[in-house]
Length: 102
Image 1 (tube, helix red, strand yellow):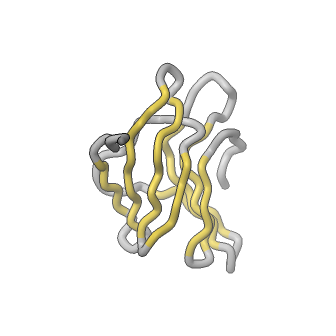
Image 2 (cartoon, one colour):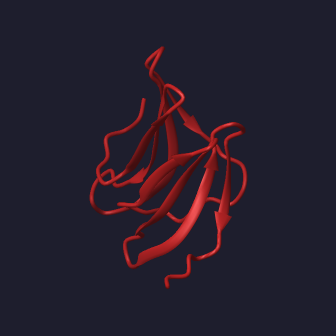
């Protein structure tokens, strides 16, 4: 079961609720990924392949294709300006370059 937290990112896709990061106690940030199967109501902690993003709160999430994209957030010291994608098909993470603002 997922521990309580605040300021996490969550998104629903393919009848599953994905939860990333957040704070369990306002003192530290997390970079874990959990999924709730909305059919069986079972939680699972995921161990994605690839490099993990830094622990953070308040990142935004968007689902497109078979990937969940996470942008930004606060790592406890700095506001992040990075983007990474999580592939829901094979549970892998891909880090992307820092977006360029125009």
